[in-house]
Amino acid sequence: MSYEGSLMYLIRGIEKLKNAALLYIMTYIIIAGFYVALFEGFLSHNAVVLITSIVLIIVAVIIGFIALFMFLIPSFSDLRDYDYSKFNTPYVLLKIGLIGGLLALFIGAALIIIAVSISVKSILVMHHWAYMSEISFMMFSPAYVYNAIVIAYIGEILVLVSLILLIVGYVGIIIGLIRLKDVTGEDLFLAAAILYIIGIFIQLLIFIAWILIYVGARSSLQRLRQSI
Image 1 (cartoon, rainbow, N blue to C red):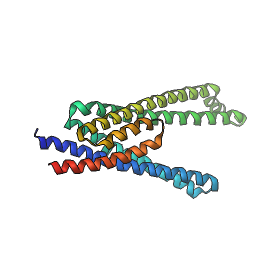
Image 2: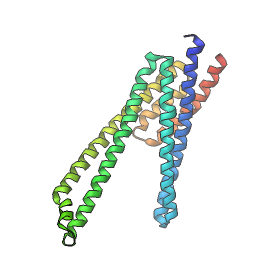
Image 3: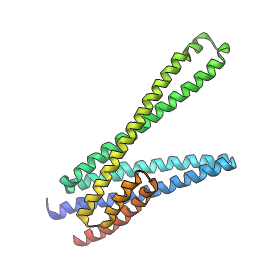
Image 4: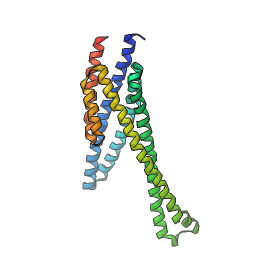
């Protein structure tokens, strides 16, 4: 492969990373709006504001998924095509960690919600069992509640596994940013990687990291395109 052809993978990868960063910045801003609307809705008991908060979080999730699957993962795929030795490990960690983590999180959360729903219904039925048929009462017997507890326990384990996998995905991003700094010479990628490390514990710093990634990607793209 020619130098120019190889360089195009790098440019495409950084371009997609820049787009991912922009979408993640938007996602964090919308999530901030969600918390403001939710807080305001509870204080004012305004149903419209509460519904708005629900719409905002749904929009944030959709944009986050678009950023991940259409830009972030493909960006590291292009970077891996540019330099396999440097970017294969970040790509694998990112893909397994974030996709696996999100999948485990959604399944685990769904199981917990199902278990809580069953438990609440069981408690209500046992309080009013005299008005229920024998079949209905058996469906919500203490044994049925025990099954709900088991389901909830499995859900909690999956949520814990998802957190571990998401950290693995974060590590992939951090390694990728550090190696991208080595390739491009852009210090903002290194600064973003450092913020990402601290951001595992302080989420606000990850928002700032994405801003640095966006600015660093724009700067890198300008230099790379001038070199062609």
